[in-house]
Length: 390
Image (cartoon, rainbow, N blue to C red; front, side, top):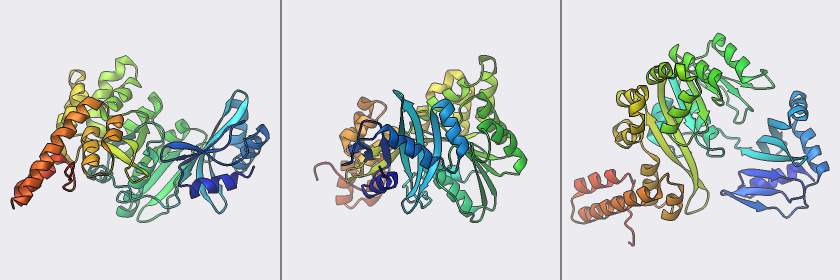
């Protein structure tokens, strides 16, 4: 088995991931679906060979895998590209998941991210969290935000990643990327030292426990901009999960600190587009005075989603609002959006209201009332007139 050949096939098919499992053919994820390659089934010898190939420059990671059965690393396949690699044991054999990392650093514009993401990337201090399930594009969004800062400010950016995926080149700023297991022993060790390195911006790969969350909040309090990720589905759950990382006797104090330090939460889900490929449905919460009060008061936290829905003037949007917009713009079909919605029934009601508003906007435009048409169109969240059945 030639792993570089398999990785090349992954790129040629437009795939995002390559999966290798013993006694199964290689499979590539294309537009969210796993497709088997016309290749022989994988053997134990094949996966042992792959393990040695992907850890040849990081022997400590090979030793870690032997001791724990888990591997997180990055691999640059000659002439093909860069991949994030996760290795693990199952039923006594080794399996791998390779995630393709584009060579070009993505930009906010190229990803089509909403204005609220740029607004948060322009912050100079505090904590910003990018959240979503595994494979929802969190790393790509963070990379685009770091790229924006790198090009628009003269600052020192330090990242702690496990592993380094997208590689940044110095522009107006300098970017120091530290890989766990290669440049520093652990997240905890890296975070203890990062504040001594004169950073302006700190990227932490993931907030996993009380210590990492506490360090992130302290860095945000002391005037740094901190970006990180969590495996949560929306802003309200993110705030709850962050608070729950701390013991009960500290949670009220953490709420007060978060109300002051948190700048925003970006949550996303990748969903199939009508014309192929996938697009990010994004919720953006910006920490206004109203939302800060809801963070501080446990009795008011459930109102955060409603506050986001009503926060368009601050470039906020809920998942539901963005899904409705994607359907009205013809980017995603209604059934796909409904399946991705937090509550399908609520989504369908909101879409019906928006479609009626679009029809009213189209009628107003036909009658020459462009101002009224524009107001109706903006209320739907769509970017162009597109009336069902027309």
